[in-house]
Length: 451
Image (cartoon, rainbow, N blue to C red; front, side, top):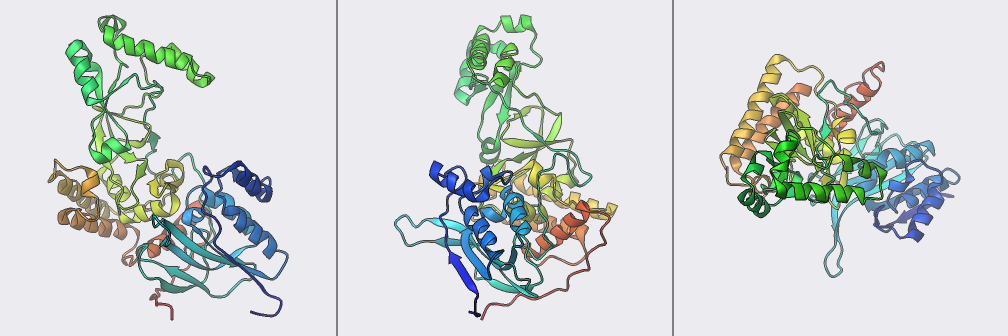
């Protein structure tokens, strides 16, 4: 240790923003002060902010073991926007690895290690993990940004529209019905047995779980039902009356106003054809299962939809390029991926100018992914995308799709997910500030194991 230099090392408590006690929240806000958006920060953010504040006054270096939530999702722009303003610079870091303790139950957490201070180091040490259980690979880099990537200090915030020229993405449909417009398989059969006339108004209803696990759920979709037809369906009308009562009983004026239209979902977006993107997917899957549906299926508010999506768009979104971006930018529900249209999709740097030949190659590879899935019609996507049971044909199809999409970005392959992220952050920076000169290409570097 140099004379007069102080080191602060720690492993602060892993407590999420929604799990803090009132006392812990007060402690966090006492340090975060009037920082806009501080309410979404995890408890550990208080240690980061306090460390950055102290480092601005004294010759201090700080390093914390913490959950990777502080370098993912909506927290990043809030926490690290303030950290960068305070002059903090990440001097070394370990990207996500899986840590387990020796206590009963063997709790497992996805962790990172971040070391920071005010000193501008000419070379910084970044430790990457091929998988969260792998041994680290040490990289010597010029900069480590808040996402623990060798790229400029950019912050990805929410956007209402895509940063690339691609179709918009929407939420599915929230019923806001108290469950009265929704039907299980058994309830559907019972209703149709009593009122066969209800059958034309019953559609399959699909959220993330139903799509991934191939579970059946149904809904009453009464958008086109004439009043005279409804009068002939007393069992359906009982459910409509229950929706009205549920909405009227709400304390929220925004819910009460929908009591005037009890036959309808709160949202009614049902394209003729669309791409469905689950809002939550297991972190064990390398790819979030995405697929095409028609208006025979009503998408719930637990999925996103892209109307009239092309096979090319499906291919890019299903690729390792987009999945790497998703893993880094999205938030988490426990440890599962929580996809976000405003953070992930709307900020994703799509290939800027693919040639017709490249587009055709992506479309052909995307078709092979769908063909490989279709070879197992009885299997759920959960089973097909389980890393232990993923069919070899589907593995090969995705590998070919990854190569086709990679080629839309550059001729040279991407050896690791980190190399993809470095490229994507450079592309994102240019989309953010298109008048800036393009960054010089980074020299390729071979990772080496730490001594």
